[in-house]
Amino acid sequence: MNDRGGMFDSGLNGAGNKGQRRVVITGMGAVSAAGVGAQALWQAARDGRSCIAETQFVRPYRGRIRRTAQVHDFVPEDHLDSNVLPMCDPVTQYLLVAADEAMAQAGLSRSERLGSRAAAIIGTGVGGMHTIENGLHLALIEQGRPYPLTVPKLIPSSCPSHISIRYGVMGPSFAVASACSSATQAIGIGAHMIRAGLVDRAIVGGTEDCLTNSSMLAWEALRVLTPDFCRPFSKGRNGMVLGAGAGVFILEAEEVALARGAQPLAELAGYGTSTDAKDHVRPDPQGCATSMTNALLDAGLAPDDIDYINAHGTGTVINDTNESEAVGIVFGDRKPPISSSKPIHGHGLGAGGALELVVTINAVRENIAPPTINFSEADAKCPVDAIPNKARAMPIRVALSNSFAFGGINATLVVRQV
Image (cartoon, rainbow, N blue to C red; front, side):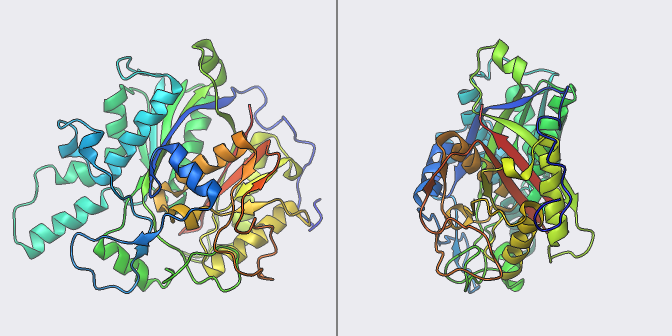
């Protein structure tokens, strides 16, 4: 029983995945508003440097909200061969560049095909949104003939298919589409497949770019976008900022990684997921709490073992209030430091959990909890330690990362030092 009355067996340390293989992360890569590279993303998050600016649209935009965390100065031809690009929407461009970085850090070469003991599992909320919008504009406005490769470019399964073809992944390959929990679920599923012995290695993560005219207008109609600053957990918060990018990770069974001399970055110790089954757009604190509890149970850890939480933290009034309540359900009167990096890289939607896992892993590796920037004043409805505005040096042995999605789909990851 925790201090708030929630049930939790504190004697589970080390028991959650006993007898199963440990899963380690041997490589990671990212493309984000901070630039190309996981290190660029981490430095921006750690230093509290916002990458949000006015969006550059291809066509005139008639909406009111124009601030996003767009991927700027990304030249696909600098990273990808000309024979690959015709099949690539921006989401697959970002994905492949991030995957190349992750593979290189893991010490894996494209010349050595990964084979049937590897999986490719990628989360995306929509898939090729730019291809969809450009195709509709061409067909309906310009009355032109659609590009012949429109369909294979836009479908969500294009993302894992590109990964499988590029690296010779011949095991399970599929996309996960669960809105803002897509990447986190893809990563968790990959870890569990390794644990269960179905595969030895998995390329996992998420990618998204919905910063198009029609998508922005749709999000604006939901009245969840801020016209100025994203300020999670802060009094006066008034919405989120959309972002774009990709995050990719190489997961391996520990014994497989060590046998080839790889140096793990961290252990992916636990994964939990749950569904509210209540409302399409309003999250349920109990559902969010269940996701965190499931992740802790999976890792064989108790709430007291968590040193830092990377929050879903969108900056909307309801989400932050409910996430704060969920943290109270799980952790009782203890207030583990919690911060949101979304004011830095935006809400990456289907890529959000992957971008945030990059931040979480680096927080664990460097023992630095990144700040929640733009924080102006504590809100009684969010009784959490939000690490306002300035990073905090502190021991972080174990961290937890949350993703909560429309439809009440929740997912949580636990990362541990190695």
